[in-house]
Length: 251
Ligand SMILES: [Zn+2]
Image (cartoon, rainbow, N blue to C red):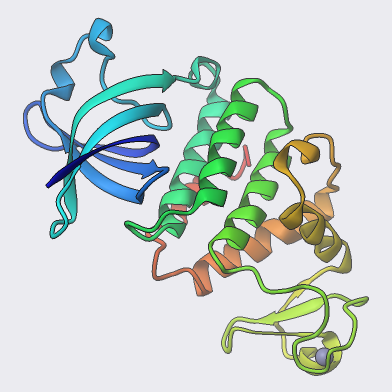
C-alpha cells in the first residue's frame, strides 16, 4: 500500500459504518477511485467537517493495488462552492454533472479533459458565469468527447457525403449515417444546427463558450442525443438516468 497526495472532486458520499464514509472521488492522478475514510462523520467544522459531495479537496490516499476500495487518511478542503449550496438550481446542476461524470468514468483511469471541465463547470456555476441549461449541454457534449462516445461529425461514415441535412443515429446497430444512407428507418436525427454547435463546443476552450447562444430547439435535440448515447452506448457505465429525468425542469 502506497501513500499519494492528489487533488480531487467528491462525486458521491455514502455512509459506511458508525463513523466511516465511502467516498467516490474523481482524482487528478488516478481518475475515479472509491475510498474509505474513517472517523469522518464525527469531524467538526474546525477539522474540515464532513466531506461534502462536489467539494474540491487535496487528499492523502493510500492505494491498495489489489483492492477496489482504497483509504483516505487526510483531506484538506480547497473549494466548498458555498454559492452552489445555497441555491436549489445550482445544487441540482452540480449534482447532475457529478452523477454524469461518475457514470461515464471507469475506475482507475485518469481523464484530464473531463477533470478540468468538471472543475471549471463547478466554478462557473458557483460564480453564476453561465446559463445553467447551456452549461449542461456543453458539459454533456464535452463529456461524451473526452470519454470516447462522440463520433466524428464532419461527413457521413458510409458515403463520405456532407451533413447538410443532418446525421442519423441508429441505436440498434450503433451506426451513424447521412439521411440518404440511413434515413427513413425511424432513427434519431441530429439536426444540422446541432452538428455545427457540437463541433464548436468539442474543440474550443471552455472559457471561450461562456457567451455562446443556443436556441431551445437545438438545445432539446442535443439533450435527446446525449440521453440516447448514454442509454444505448454508455450503458455499461451508467447506473441510472432517473436523476436526469427527475430534474428535467431545471436542466
Ligand atoms: Zn451517407
